[in-house]
Length: 127
View: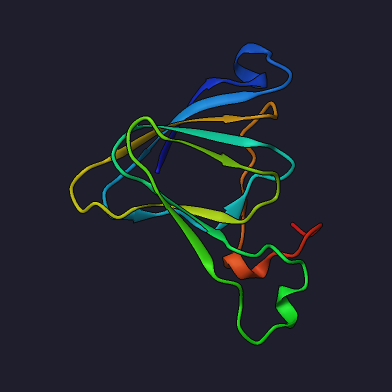
């Protein structure tokens, strides 16, 4: 995945947001991650990226034998996706030939990414 910064605290001095573009190569999967206390919005410019979340962000899910189910959002050009703060997720581009391009905005000055060992390995309040 290639990220391009358009607007950030460092780049233009903005105080309450970050905005940029990400190109997701064909057959690419991001690491499981969250964006800390940032609200994140994504607009799909081209391609058909998929966003994978936990269906049940219950903080006690580690105590269950079977983890929560995943929700997969299949998107296309013109779609918007909202990701709340601290929500573990990943982006995927399952298309073997077509790159996916998305515009991303965060409600923080920089695009913080906290990589996780898995969607199930995060508990509220931990990084």
